[in-house]
Amino acid sequence: MTTTTYTVKGMTCGHCVSSVKTEIGRIDGVTSVDVDLATGAVRVDSTEPVTDAVIAAAVDEAGYEVAV
Image (cartoon, rainbow, N blue to C red; front, side, top):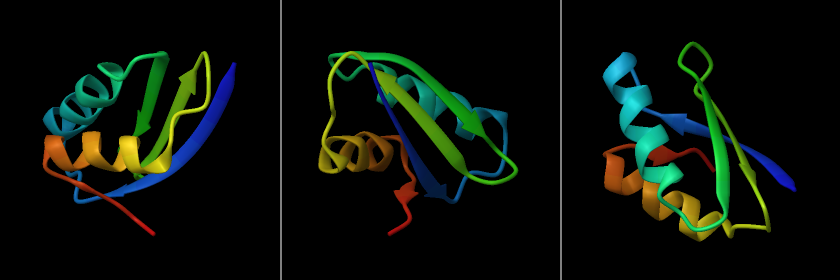
């Protein structure tokens, strides 16, 4: 099990959280996604490491951006 935390910019509501969770949740190997709207923190648990680029692409697909 691998856990990684990212900061996502631009989320302002529950729909934003849902969109990010859905897109990241579609990635192979991801077992859970926890989003804290107040801080923008997104914790991703997966069965194996997922590259930052794959996470960033999923967040981008949802309409948001991973802070660097």
